[in-house]
Image 1 (cartoon, rainbow, N blue to C red):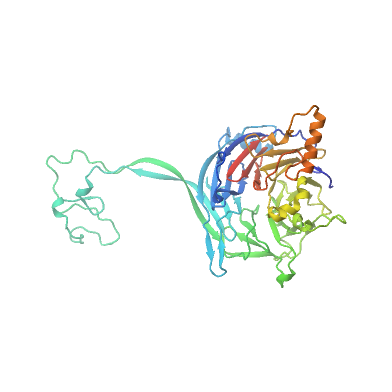
Image 2 (image 1 turned 180 degrees about the vertical axis):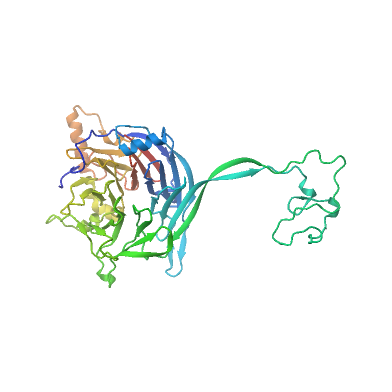
Amino acid sequence: MNGGDDVVAAAPSGPPVPLEWKFSQVFGERTAGEEVQEVDIISAIEFDKSGDHLATGDRGGRVVLFERTDTKDHGESRRDSERMDYSISRHPEFRYKTEFQSHEPEFDYLKSLEIEEKINKIRWCQIANGALFLLSTNDKTIKFWKVQEKKVKKVAEMNVDPSKTMGNGSIASSSNSSNPRPSLENGGYPDSDRSYNYLSPDFSFPPGGIPSLRLPVVSSHETSLVARCRRVYAHAHDYHINSISNNSDGETFISADDLRINLWNLEISSQSFNIVDVKPANMEDLTEVITSAEFHPTHCNTLAYSSSKGSIRLIDLRQSALCDSHAKLFEEQEAPGSRSFFTEIIASISDIKFGKDGRYILSRDYMTLKLWDINMDSGPVATYQVHEYLRPKLCDLYENDSIFDKFECCLSGDGLRVATGSYSNLFRVFGCAPGSTEATTLEASKNPMRRQVPTPSRPSRSLGNSITRVVRRGAENPGVDANGNSFDFTTKLLHLAWHPSENSIACAAANSLYMYYA
């Protein structure tokens, strides 16, 4: 099913009421005119399975973790998420938890290649013993991190003048500063690595003795979050890593680059298994590359990967060790006579996501979002036009390289809505239940709905005239969209994530993290 702007189709139940989105909070908001540093731009964003933690990665190689603070009671919130009760519209609140430097810039001397520190993807792993685990990757190296609270003991010191001591904190006489290292005869230790705590032979207590000797005791326990790199998975990719995805078995994950997909065991960093290899014998015969890959949410033997030709392949790891052949192929047939110079470029899929139950796959190409049913490979069950008003501008978008921007997509936990980003820091939310006509445009700002109201340039006598003029202005002026708003190719909303069990979206606009709820 494919059609004009905001076409809708298949998914679970009847059409829900369109959501009203509200601003929740922002981290790292820029002041007017503030210049954004390249290293601070957010390049990855991910909720964990519970939705109580959120991680972002940036171009400077840092990973920042946020923690939810508004959950009334862990048991109650867990029951809510199991029930998937979307009628509860709690206002989600997060706070900064910690950050750590995940990757540093490197240089590959063999290939004379600079490897930047930018985080391409973050994936949460299973929580164990109160510790958080996550995978992060740049172009070449994947790292497995453990973030845990550690108790730091603070010890009160002795009340003895340190200038009167000898060895490691031992009391010594000031008259015998040249006393030699102790031997076994005078009570020293045979092990040279041991500390020497001893009294100088000619030590005498002051007249009247020491009134009170305070011994070292633990005075306080301070807790601090410590991030530790548990494993480094390196030297397995010749090309840039574009995806990592955890398996539902909790033990393995995949990493994908342009031509290969590797399967790793979380506990083994020294070797991986190549499960997909699309590299031709002669590189001149190369016609398509892998753009994104993801494991099925519940079937540990199934995964999907997308290509630059706009197709999605579903593969079954039980069929063979090297999955050169796919179990299913999903692609849309080209309409006759519609081919142009840009057809293949805008058909390239930049991101795919499985729905929570694994029945549907959402894919994002340059112009559209498509929803696929894995039981139906004849074509997508729904197509949503994201920014159709840019179609006449494809030539300019090609000139300034914007046509190669990789927008991400996400689905709500209940499978009733999908979302993706666009230019001018806009993002769009579509309803995908049968009969739904929901298509909301929001802006990453404190007033997310403001872009929806077209504002005429001068007062008009009748409402009909003003709407006509706005629409006409959008068609005539290449710098404005259908609502008459100017669009800016330099501000783009590439990364966003939907909370796994509530209607809450986190999205990244440059170095700012905006959060909304409905």
